[in-house]
Image (tube, rainbow, N blue to C red):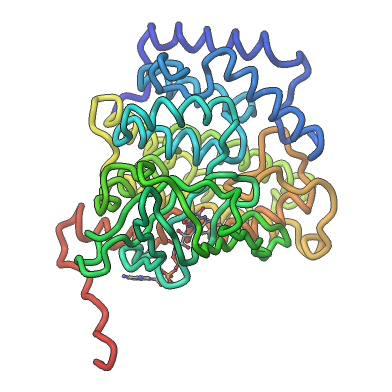
Length: 411
Ligand SMILES: Cc1cc2nc3c(=O)[nH]c(=O)nc-3n(C[C@H](O)[C@H](O)[C@H](O)COP(=O)(O)OP(=O)(O)OC[C@H]3O[C@@H](n4cnc5c(N)ncnc54)[C@H](O)[C@@H]3O)c2cc1C
C-alpha cells in the first residue's frame, strides 16, 4: 500500500483545486449549506460547468465528450470534489455516466456509443437501473420480466422494483428474460428502453424516511428497437456484471472523506450537548474514529491495487460491508447523542438519501434522523451484507459454495 501520491499527481491536484477556486464562490461551504431549492439550482448549473470543462465523464474518451483522464487523475478529481462538497453530476448521472456509459464503452456497438453517450452528457437522456424484481433481488438470475422479438422491436412485459430515481428518468437499462428454455443466467438480455411511452408505468414507493426516492416500474407491451440490446441477445448477464462492477467499485476514494466529515460533525454535536465527558459516549466516538481511520487505509489499499492495474474484484465486497455496517453504527450513536430530540426532527433534511449528508450540512436533528433511517438501506442496496459475505467466503477465501435452496415441495 502506498498512502502518498507522486509529485506529478500532486501537481494535477493543484490544477483541480484551481478549477474549484475559480468556479465556486469565495464563501463556499459545500452543498450541505444550501436549502433544497438552491441546491437544485446549483446542481443544474454546476453540471453544465462540469460538462463545459470536461469534468463530467472523467474517464470517457474525448471523442465522446469525456475528460480522457487517467485512473489516477479520476481518483484525484473525485477526492477534491468530495472535499469541496460539490457533486460530480445530478441524481441520474450515477446510472447514466458511471454505470451505463462505462458499460457501453466496453460492450456497446459503435452506433449505440455514438447515439447514447453524447445524449447522456448533454442531459437529454436521464437513466435509471431496472435490475431488481419482487422475486429477484439477491438472486437476480431468477428475473422474469420478459422481452419477445416482434419484427423490428422487442415487446416487454413484467415488473421491476426499487428503481432509484426512476421518477426522474426517461430511459431505463433493463435486464429481461429473452429465452425461457435456457439455464437461468443464459437467457437474459440487456435492453435500452425509453420510459416515455404508454406501456411503462412508474409508481413511487414511500420510504421509512417519508421520501420517495425509488419506485415500482410496470411494463405492459412496452417496446424498444431490436438493435437496442447491449452485448448480444441472451448475453445480458455478462453485461450486467460489468455494470455492477462500476456500481460497487466507485467509492474507495470518496467514502472515507465523506465519513470523516460526518464524524467531525457528530463529535461537534456531542460537544454541543455536553456529552464528551461521558465515558461511554467517548468510547463509542473513539470506536467510530478508529473505524473511519481503518476505512481510509482500506480505501487506499483498494486504490493502490486499482492504480496498479488490478480492477476491483470480489475483494471490493470488503469495502462495501465495511462502510455500510460502520454507517449504521455511527448513525445509531447520533440518535443516542440527540436523545429524545431525535424523535421530533427539525431543521434541514439531508440533500441525499444515500450515504452521509453533504459537506456543510447543519447539525440539525432532521439531518441526523433521516440519515439514520436511510442508513438502514445501505446494507441492502448494491448487494446485501449477507451476499457480500457469501462472495468473500466463496471467491476470496475459497470456502464451499452456498447451498442452493431446496426445490419447491422439498424440505
Ligand atoms: C435504497 C435502495 C435502492 C435500490 N435501488 C435499486 C435500483 O435502482 N435498481 C435496482 O434494480 N435495484 C435497486 N435496489 C434493490 C437491491 O439491489 C435489492 O434490494 C437487493 O439486491 C436485495 O434484494 P431483495 O430486496 O429482493 O432481498 P432478498 O434477495 O429477498 O433478500 C432478503 C434477505 O435474505 C438474505 N439472503 C438472500 N439470499 C441469501 C443467501 N443466498 N444467503 C444468505 N442470505 C441471503 C438477504 O441478505 C436479505 O437479508 C435498491 C434497494 C434499496 C434498499
